[in-house]
Structures are given as structure tokens and as C-alpha cells.
Amino acid sequence: MPGSSTRIDVLIPAIPKDLVTLPHVINSIRKYVKHPIGRIMIIAPKNQRIIDFCRRKGCRFINEASVLPIGKKGIYSHTGRWNRAGWLYQQLLKLSGDKLSSQRFFLVIDADTVLIRPHLFRINNKTVFYCRNWTHQEYKNAYRKLLGKRATSPVSFVTHYMLFDRAKLSRLKRIIASRHNRNWYIAILDRINKTKPINFSEFETYGNFVRSHYPGAMIIRSSMNKSLSSNFLSLSGKKVKKLARKYRSISFHKRKIYFRK
Image (cartoon, rainbow, N blue to C red; front, side, top):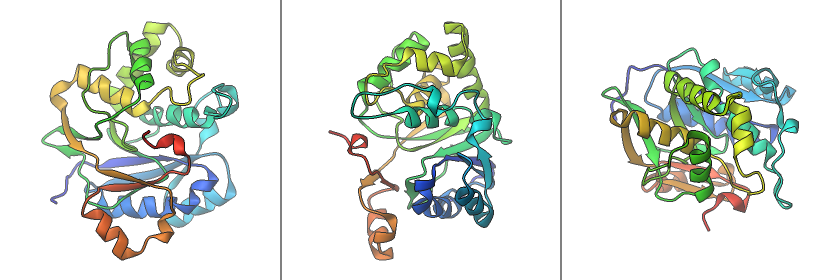
């Protein structure tokens, strides 16, 4: 696959338990993302293991407490079985990437997702969105509440990684803030259904926004992601090569809530 000259930053929200998979995530970015990479930023709680890891891997550590004036403890999202405050907080941190990246475009990728095939995110001045064919209705409900319009995309943008355009993301947040007369992150927390275990998606929201406002700026491709409950270290090189014949990436989800019913 030919590469692109568009330089991008990378943003990865993480917590200490992600240190098992995170080295492989970063290695896969450097191997398979066909763009010049600026900074790889790890946004995480202040933790010495993560700080030392960033130093070893040549990444920039960003203390998550410095990004937003609210923290995980200030978010209520509890269903009785699932406490989703940390999950929501990470999504808000991702949507803050326009204030953290020094490049126009930045790639956000989950700390449990490893690329196993080459990826290109900009082609002919258009952004490539890797998508799947199913979603959760609450994601669409949240979009309608926030933007006042239906999410009309026939595909889902929830595929564990996405390239953001800082200008488009900033516009999305300004519209949300203006429409609800409050900070964009407060508007999100106020409008979503916090009694549902799955209630908001940053990727679904941004993807549908771009599709609605910049329809000619997108290229849609199948994500071909495989969710596994095992650990990356348990996979042999031969097994990874076999998976790469069919999939573009693999995600190591520990909670069943992430799997499609």
C-alpha cells in the first residue's frame, strides 16, 4: 500500500491495566499506519508505570487531569451492574484531542486494539472511515438529542479507531455547546441516558456529524475488526498472520458488554 505525506498525531487514552496490550498497539501504529507520525500521546491518570512506559516507547505522557475540568469521579453513569463513568470519561478525553494535537489530523485508537494490516486514513483530500454494519440504538438517540437531527448513516463508525480533523471536531463541539447553552462535555453528560450500559459513542457522533455536514469528504471502508477475549501475548506470529488474511485489526475486550449480542 502506498503511503501518504499527511503527517498525523496519535492519541491513546489508557489506564494502568492497558500496559499489557499498549506496547503492541503502539508497535502496530508505527508499522501499519501509512502516514508520517508526529507525536504519539498517551493520555492517562498520573501513574509512574505509565510515565516510565511513555519514556521507553518515545511517547508523550499527558495527565488526563489537565485536559478537562471534570474527572471520572464527577461523572455518574451506573446501571446497577455496570459503572460506565470511566468509559464515558475516556470518550470525553478523545473529543478533547483538538486541543492536544499539533497536527490538523490526529488518530484516536483504543488501548486494546492492535492493527494487523496497513492503514491509510487520507486519500485525495478525503478521510477514510473504517466502519461496521451494526450499532446500538442509544448511540443514535444520543446523537439526535445532542444535534437535533437523526443519525442517518447506514453503517456504524464504532470501530475502535478513527482519524479526526481538528477543525471539524471543534465545529461539532461548538454546535453542541451553542445548542444546549453549556460546555460541550456537560451537554453530553446531561443529554445521554446514563441508566443504560451503552449510551454514547464519540466515534458514532463524530462520524455522523461529518457525514451530515461534509458528505463529500468521506471514504467508507469495512473495518474488518475481530474481537478476542484472549491476550495478544497468547497469539503466535503465525496466528496473527492468519488473522490478517481476513481482518484489519484485533481488539482484546475483557467485558462481554463490548460484544455484539
